[in-house]
Length: 437
Image 1: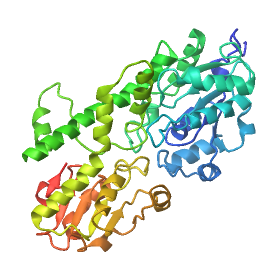
Image 2: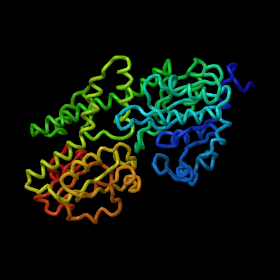
Image 3: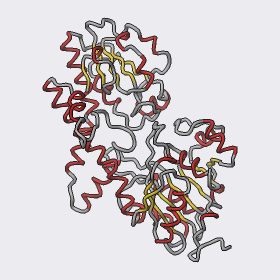
Image 4: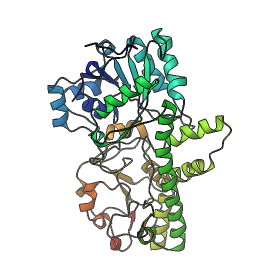
């Protein structure tokens, strides 16, 4: 039996996978691929690699026993580029952030493409998973591989794009259950890329007609959610001004069969709060000003400041002195039950309140205090929530970690009759709460 197709690309039986970038996306994917193919995970962060090789994932996306089982079966992680040289199917899963001006920052992708260029050989395939605007794979990434390797795209090596759909902290929609979009740079490669993913996914794949279509499909998934949440946030502002409970309105409206039920909230993290900027910028290159997406981003980016000001308003209405008040913020990560602090909007609540008082305590059992200190310059507490009993003038439930659902937040107030509880997530009993988003 021939080991390769006529074009030189490997057969399904010969696939050897290297996943470049072992974060929230790369590690679960590499672990899954390792159940079917020889797989190596590559990451520049040696501490990350060492922890994974000892059987622990600090992102909590892959449980320790599952990771250990993969390691025992031959999966391994490395920071050594030489160890991925013998692979023939490279998957790039590195971040695609924005800079301080919300412009796409493609440097992690370019760096990963250089890495691939150093090890790729004839007949190999590289598949990108990072969220980008249409055209990045073919216009920005593959020329880097060509320049470094000396190989020619679609003659010597081939490419695909299969956008990640990892939802950090979600134990229901795990990587093997996600239906994935796939694509390839030729008809033959598209079929092989699709077959590789299909072989490890319970719910299969959707093969897009081109890499650009696959890129576009991913970015509108997140942009659509951003716009929908922005609409809910705008409604929350309107109904709060009218003295109507937004959650009651949403419950009533969602009794209609085709109402899309979403709640208002803080939109942070590395996807919904970042990805739309990629399409916004590229659209303007083509002479289109994406007004709805741009407005949604502005509105969602301002919600942390809004929550802080609504808390201050509630304190004033109760006669609680805001200047030098003691305030407890419960939760700092960008979403519940997840340690990810990237682009958390809780920092905006904190900064607005700091203009009035230095006495702010942030408690989050999921977040790493060292990472929070390094990234945001904020000291957080994560041990023993009971130490805060009876100390605060206001409590803000910012993130709905499961552990907070069993805590009586009223116990943290100095005086329950004068103190304020603000519920960002709408999860606390109504009678406890003075205001909610």
